[in-house]
Length: 194
Image (cartoon, rainbow, N blue to C red; front, side):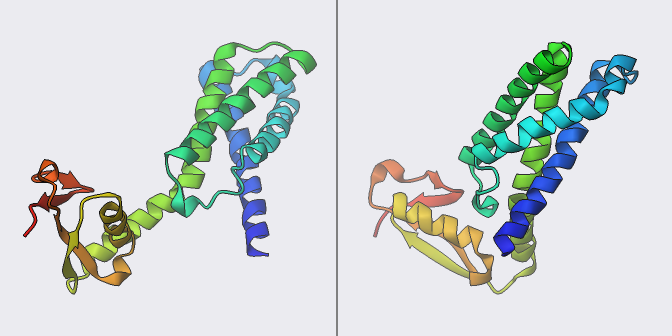
C-alpha cells in the first residue's frame, strides 16, 4: 500500500513539474513574453507534454527504482526518459498543434531533467546530509582497520560510511599488495601488510 501511495505521489509531483518545465521553457525561450498563439493553447500544450511524459517515465521505470540506492544508472535513466519525453512531445505537438522552436523543447528537456533528477535524487542527498550530520555529532565512533583493499574491502568501507548508526569509522586499510600501498580506497589510506 505504501509503495502504491509513493508511486502516485511521484506521478502527481511529476505532473506538476512537467508543467512547470513547459512554462519555464516558454518563459526563457520568449524572454518573458509568450506569444498569444502559445498562450491560447497552453492548456493543450501542457496536457500533451504531460500525457507523453508520464507514460515514458513509467516505461523507463522512474516509478520503480529505490531512490535511496540511486547511482549513475538511475541518473542515466532520468536523462534518457526526459530526452525521450521531449522528443515525443516535439513529434506530437508538431502533428497535433503547430511547430514551436526546437530550442523550446531543448529547454523543456533541460528543466525536466533538473526537476526529475532533483525529486528523485533528493532522497539520497538528504540521506547523505543526515549521515554527515550524524558523523559530526557522534564522538563515540570506534576506529576500525579493514584488512584487504580489494572489492570486499571497498564494500565494507562503503557500508560503514553509509550506516553511521553502527558507530564504526574506517581509518586504515591493510593489504599485502605493494601496488596498493600509499593509495586511497574510498578516501581511506592503504598501508602495507604485517
